[in-house]
Amino acid sequence: MQTNPSNNRTQQAPNHEPFENERNQQSRVRRKSPSPRATPMTNSLDTYAEEIQTFVDERDWEQYHNPKDLAIGLATEASELLELFRFLDEHDITERLKDPNYRQRIHDEVGDTLFFLVRFAQRLDINLLQAGQEKLQKSREKYPADEYRGDNWKVLDP
Ligand SMILES: [Mg+2]
Image (cartoon, rainbow, N blue to C red; front, side, top):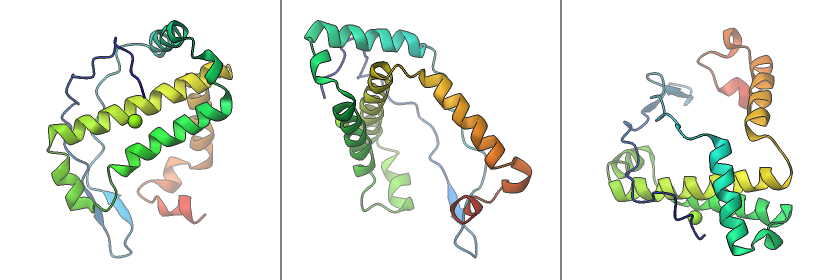
């Protein structure tokens, strides 16, 4: 996809330690330690959404952004992210994540995916943060921490 020139695509992805997972005897995935905290998102979603709207308006692309095609764009970009992990096992991924170019490719696909997610939300008048927070609350209720702590297989096999 074409990119917003105001996005600094040359900025290097944050250097998180790769996730380290292990499998227990039942081949259940467990994390050795808590997830590293993500780099703070200092710019607001509203500001980014405004940048996207300007980007679209300047190119007169609103006419192409119907919900179906935006949903296709979202799925396509998410698939491009997934493609970066194709045929790689956990060891391969850990090694690849040491490569700044590989991390940048992930960074770019995350950005592309976010573009379409925000754009889709704009077109359908969905408050992204509200949607996320409401779904998170439903998940809190569906998966009480005391019952699901350390066991993600109950989610797959309730
Ligand atoms: Mg892409």
